Amino acid sequence: MKLIDKFSVISDWIIRLVWTNLVWIFLVLMGGIVLGFMPATIALFTITRKWARGELDVSVWKLAWSTYKKAFISANLAGGIFFGLALFLYADLRIVFELMHGLWSTILYFFLMFLLFLVGIALLQYFTVFVHFQMKNVRSYVAQSFLLAFTSLKNTFMIVVGVIFCAWLISKMPAFILFISGVLPSYWIMKINLQRFKQMEPK
Image 1 (cartoon, rainbow, N blue to C red):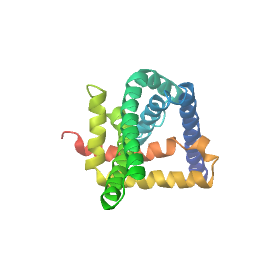
Image 2: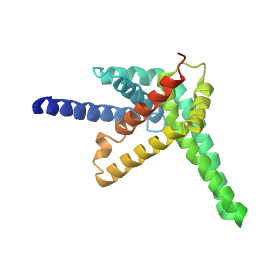
Image 3: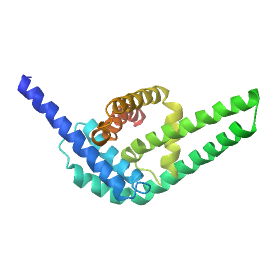
Image 4: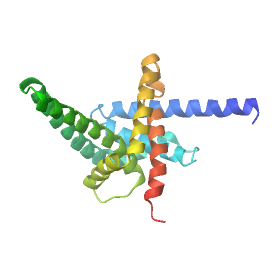
């Protein structure tokens, strides 16, 4: 590949990433952040799934907007489940930290921290599960997300490493929040999980 061709490919990817991330931020804000985050992120993962499968010539806004509207209610229902679990675990952590002492309280504290971490991983898995599989209801998607978080330890490790790297990159250059904060980790997670999903599909 000639240098000018490489430059063209890189430029196309930069434009693609930045535009998609700005669309994601806009949709999050349009839902008032609280109600916009889940459906906007579903839309984001829908786009990055297509990229990961080699479908680069997609209309970002058209696909994002149609997915956002379609997934608005179900995505927020799932978000409510994850938020409720996280809030419950956080309240337990506060109780253990403030009222309990000794070895068992320390063990319980770290166990609750692990469960809270697991909820976070399951949330990330939820987005990929939702855009890849067709399931009966919200509960099925959430259950499958936790199952993946438990059983795909290699994938979980790679996802965590990628997310930490993205967070480090943004901490060094905060302006990247506008340009890659959602789309880069989304693409990374989708690429990793697609390999796992291929193994799960019937031969």
